[in-house]
View (cartoon, rainbow, N blue to C red):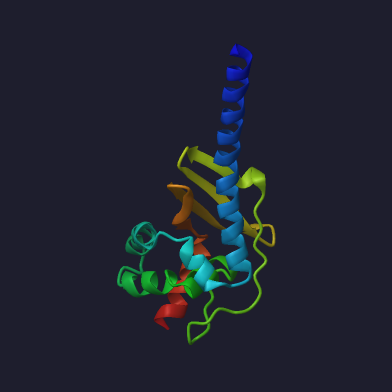
Length: 168
């Protein structure tokens, strides 16, 4: 009887540990798939828009309020970036948007298991690479059993390209 109870506890712990590791990996795979196929609807389901807007806006303000670009209107850049096509362009194409806001075709985003970092039981970050260069670092938080994109860190050149495509 005692042995059966111990076995049951071990099985439950193994299932919990597997779930805790598998669900974030599945969310990251879903994010990569949505980017690769440029599926804006699937991408939108993986984003916590309010939290992402706050974190990206703060990052863009910090970037452009420090230098000579102090007059850069942040809101248009943030609003365009936080559309599904904007996120796809920022991650897949380094910030390049076409004049009418469409994203160029083709997206070869990769991530390695070694690029995944658990910051807590409900938060992880992962580096997404394009041509062996980090294209973006995504941060996803757990909400129940689902994981949502809450922060996005892009290379400095991507912010500049994105700003230029929005403001010009």
